[in-house]
Amino acid sequence: LLCGPRRRRGLGRLGCSGRGKGRRHERCMRTMAAWQAKPRECAAQTVRSVRSICLCVQLFLQHTSAMHLNQGIAASGTQQAIRGLKMDRSGTMTQLLGRATPRYSRCHVVNGARPPPLTARSELSLSRRSKRRKRGAHKEEMQQFAIERPARSAERPFRYLCVLDVEATCEEFSRNYVHEIIELPVVLVDLEKSRVSSEFHTYVKPTANKTLSPFCTRLTGIRQSQVDAAPTLETALVQLEGWLEAQGMLLDAPVAERNFAFAADGPWDLKNFLDAECERKGIRKGAYFDKWVNLKQLFSDFYRVRSCKIHKMLEFQGMTFEGRLHSGIDDSRNIARIAIKMAQDGCVMYLNEGLSRKPKFVSL
Image 1 (cartoon, rainbow, N blue to C red):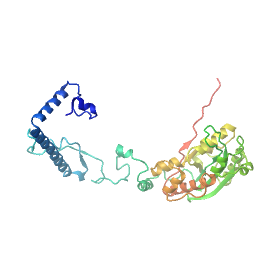
Image 2 (cartoon, helix red, strand yellow):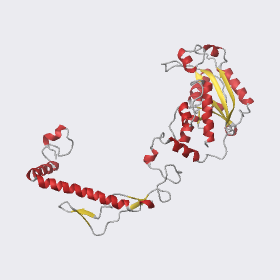
Image 3 (spheres, helix red, strand yellow):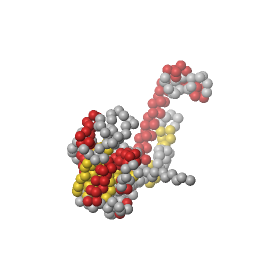
């Protein structure tokens, strides 16, 4: 009912445009004149209209709630339910002879009732809102749902998992810093027996930035004397290959026939650190480093949660971090514990990440 100067006071589009013309302005002026001439009659008419609307909503709710909601059907709209209702000029509401039966459509239910939150996907078609739910909600229910899911295959593609978490040189507040590996640990996990069978650990001597920064020493706990007495990355990779052969790993077998696979907490260790340094220094490395198990992504997909850090994954599984954070060997041991717990819960490890194919240039 607002018109003219009142609209310019920030009262919104409740009346006409305030320009003194148009249908909305004429209707607004007629309504204002009626209220000024007969205020009591207009107020009574408004009260009767509000009561009629409330009664209409109440009848609709009673009508829909009494219908076949337990039989797996839901009302398609309000217009069909109130088709048999009308209002006269006095504002009172009367009901036509015979209540119109609303149309209904089938909805996705299980056994005539709403399904529980955790059911198989084949039994329930999730809505878009359900798909957009936060992954971090209801962790225990999601964990139970992930455990009950069927495995990808009856047999594991490999038996052993080589968990790797390297440490590299770093500098605080430096984005263009060239990292070099200074610690190379590998923890061998037997997935069939769900235990750690062996460990490999060595420090690595950097060649480009030979002096460790104080920030790198505080973060990793590695001292300068430890890297000075350590072998270079090329020698460390040769020692790692000999250790893998001693453990019975099939290094020269094709990918489908290997009995082991490397695993890391994300793509950084094998892609951004190891492969980048080997490519930069021209160091030969085995083909088994080209594809690996991204445990961070696999953990998120299996338990239906957001990607998180190592200590958060341990807390989700009911464990705590053991050792020193950002220590290569301690991080590898804790990641191995996460992998063992995932295997016990029914997760099947598989190669879910690898290096992208590098373009080959042919001289014409």
